[in-house]
Image (cartoon, rainbow, N blue to C red; front, side, top):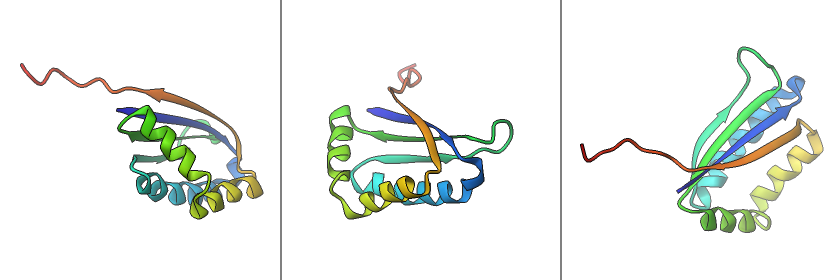
Length: 105
């Protein structure tokens, strides 16, 4: 299992556009076999930082999703929205693995 963590620097004056973008991607990730954990938008503190997390069964499954997303019409439309509106100024992508408690005790 691998979780993709995205940290975005966004244009705080386009928060609604970024929220719409996030709502587009949640079902798209799930369409390709991932489990989306949501987008997290600024509330208190910095007004230009947002985050998202989603999980795939493996890094190979994530890579398959990335390849498929490049030719999927809905994904292409979401990419184009971000490019046209320019509400994402920068982003960082990290991959994490979960640690679970000892269930055998």
